[in-house]
Amino acid sequence: MTGDGGDGGAEVGFDQLVGANIRAYRTAIGMSQLELAEALGRSLGERVHQQTILKIEKGTRPLRFSEARAVAKVLGVQDYMLLAGREDRAARGLLLQLNKDFRGHRKALKEFAADLAPQLVDLALLMAALDQESASDEDGRTADLGPMKAWAESWLLTNWGRELNREIMSTLRKQEFMTDLRDEFKGDSYREVLDRVRGTELRPIHPSISQLAMLDALKYRPAPPDGLDDFDDLDDPDA
Image (cartoon, rainbow, N blue to C red):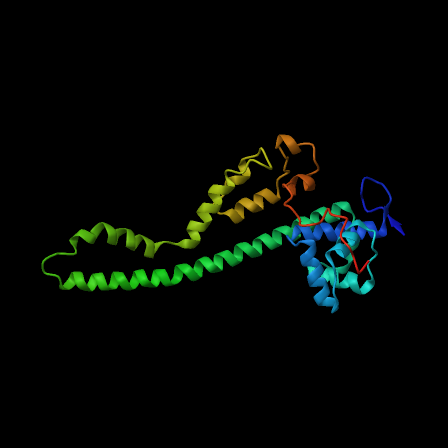
């Protein structure tokens, strides 16, 4: 069984198409072949070897239907996405990667808030104690804390949401990778900026990728090492 798959118009075997999609989605979410094998094994209730995943991704080891559904679930995609053509694969792979990244950012923000909140409480309690001590101190011995109390007050009054917005805006304005247009970065919030970006015809200007299609340019990143993905000399009991 063959299908177009969008790979330069060449006929791509069904198993090769599915395997290429699995590899694209797996790498997009930062999962190694070994991790996929272990997760798939847990889902199927049987041992799956890394070499099996290697052969599946190369299209030399067909997937059973139950395996295909389990792989899709592990990767967090719909079953039909395993049959996507090249362009769909690129877009969906990038969306998977960005979704993973944004989940990480949200987790980091929650951890930041968990660290920040008790420190703000400690600072508020300390300021209350200093205020009480200052009110009862007839010798003015706390006068030298004036400057420190000033910046302490500034931390208590800081709008951390506004600070985050300001930092994001500052970073957005420095972006030169995707576009030579600057007007879309004129906005009062990063949401407004991103709305303008969505309505802009972006043009990649990075010299090394200026000839690539937009989706390829967007996902252009150095590929991290991926364990034993390129090794073919492992024994595979599941083959």
